[in-house]
Image (cartoon, rainbow, N blue to C red):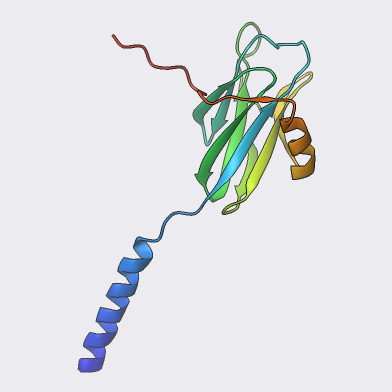
Length: 138
């Protein structure tokens, strides 16, 4: 009887401590260095269908998100199509960075870059700290 009570108590305590474990996260960089096409417009960047940034030309943004699988998309603004790009699935690992480069050709989309290439591109870009426009008070 004492063994059963001790076992139940031990399982309960271990469940409590595991539920307080901090959530692991990684980083996602969005890098935009496009040519003159659309250079004056900010693109809308989404993670898991949630708007996370209005990204201007020659800028990058950094986002800490939970580790795991996520979907990223981008959407143009201004004249023309406002359809989101094809979704790209990425796997965010704890304490690691993913680098997403905006490609603006015949279609607007993102592709993942290796760290060495992305770090070279980051040297030429400015960080966007205020990614989303401030909400206006009514």
